[in-house]
Image (cartoon, rainbow over all chains, first blue to last red; front, top):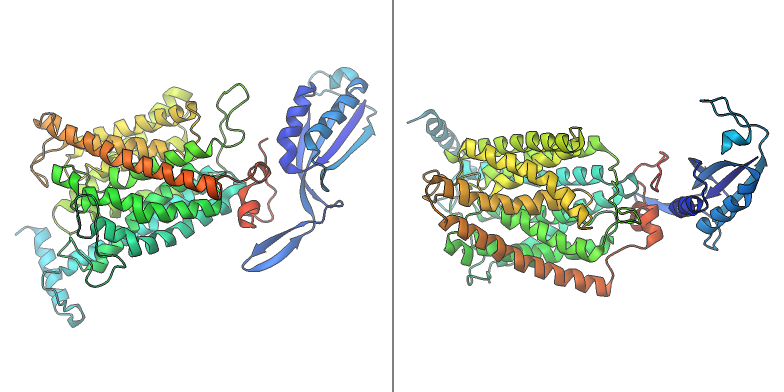
Length: 113
Length: 439
């Protein structure tokens, strides 16, 4: 079991969601986050003052998958989120020791599926 | 002498003692002038109503953009109406177009002899601005800021005053006997037609339709803001309709009453219709039902009885709910329901004059249900088409010109990320974390 964490551009969320659904990955948790990567930030103006925003808005997806879904999930996220410019984001893959479905008490791969 | 006339006379006596008010034109009535200015201020504030209704019904990522549109288009509207619009609308000319009184000054043609020309102008200019605000909601969340402002200029300088001249400026429809008291056709349906043309050329927002063509609800981000906007518009309408009498006479309270009754009836019937269709009394439909009733009573408010106004409002409230669903089905994506409110009910209210007009209130015109036969109804239908078709075609031509030059629509990434950053460079809710994409 793996936990896949992807940090992507907020504007790419619809595309990533679509790609994940196409790869039959339906379960995900999505949060708004801010963070900094290689991307340089952007400017806003307020009452005539230009200021730089350094921590950028990103969307973070957490997807717990069984082994056979790891590659398809990674590929789907890349397919949906990649534009080729700086700021497309990162994917982290973590080992997941356990998973329990609260409603039934199922554990492990059963609980994820 | 009844109580009303007595107090009016007393006010006149008070005013007559103030030398500041010694008008050089003796026919000018200062009480009427005061009332029209107050009414104009109320209509002016309807801009805030439009801004909040539209912002509330749009997503948070587009709020700055839509508020910015509403704020600036009012400025453009007043300037354009002063320079060009007023002359086309109220200047002396042919039955088609007015040809003097541009760049309004002391000598501008003034159809209301009881009012100073600048009071009349200010009231009419506030009306002209309302037409642009109607468009703003329908094209929201995807139109380029500059394209909208350019269209707004054309709207107030040309499209709105042309129809206005025909109906209120002594043009061909007024000679025919067409009756649109406060602008169901002149203001609301013209705004609606122009918006319809724009929406057709713009296309639907990303995410409005599923891949199988099913309609997806794109929910507004602030129902409290939309509700406040609805209340402000509701209040403003009591300047819009009763002010259109252009004097403070015995008709004004009845016009306020019919305006109030129709809006209340619209609320109840829209709420009931929504409840029957979806099981819940949808607040967005309650607000739109109020506006629908107000738009519908705008043309007939001076010539219908209180019960008549309730029937008009009930039908408006039902129409607005079905019209919202109808436009969604046609893939005409109108984020705030402006077409259902202003276009559909502008047409309905204009036709309602031909059905419910009671002879004796302000004229001898009689509707179908009051023994007038089909005559007035026919004239009203001619007016709906006679103003609507040219307005729609002119708007379509100008939207098309904009589309093929500067472009109408923002890019895909910008639309998904929000027009606040893309167009305005400023967020509406700095410091809040908001999903800028559909979740």
